[in-house]
Image (cartoon, rainbow, N blue to C red; front, side, top):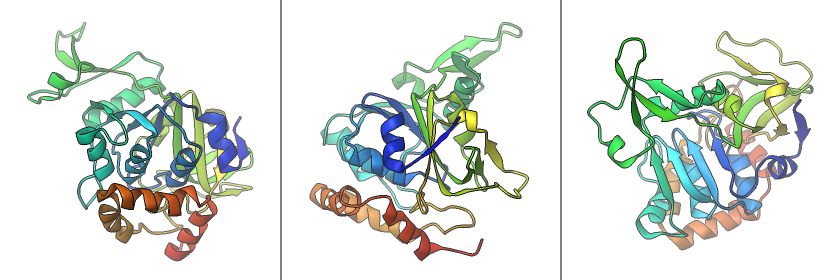
Length: 285
């Protein structure tokens, strides 16, 4: 059963140095507040897993949290490169970063395999591409029934999955609505799960046909963090801050500028700052 905790206590309870952690959210509901808390707590030697690493992982890489990145696309969406990610790869700053690159289809299938407690994922893919030349975890297997050759990758079974959602009830059931990525699969594949939410409510209330409800037994800890997905968005609560993504490009290009920004906006701030972002970007539900 999920326990409702403060963000600091929740991160301390689920995330340890050396863990493999998936911080998921596809454009929508990216858990920035939880990532900031991991940075403040000084987590190190993490294997970061994410289908689309963007600003949240640029910050964690630049602050020295990551040892390895397992991913299927990396960039500042709609803007360009992740400069802290590039600096780690090209110059080893703040230290070297191992890479394991996949296609989106491989990551999605690997999460689904992990959620099903299977050792690997099998799918049609990786034909006529170069990724298998640089990633030894991409293999080929023959179907035992038809002989068709298929792609295979190891299942993703994170130690920890962290996501952001809209609401949780007091029993620890979690509601997600709007654009979904692989949050459900990443949660079910993980050993421990932290969900930050916009609000904790007595009842989850009416929901749309595409809503996902994660039952309390799938979640380890819940933290109420209004605005916790900023600068991404939370459907019905606040909009995406497109200006932030544009501004990040300049902030992240220079090491000293990046470190100064992180000191002022992450290390010296707590999760309460996200509520102010939410109020500024709030839209009608």
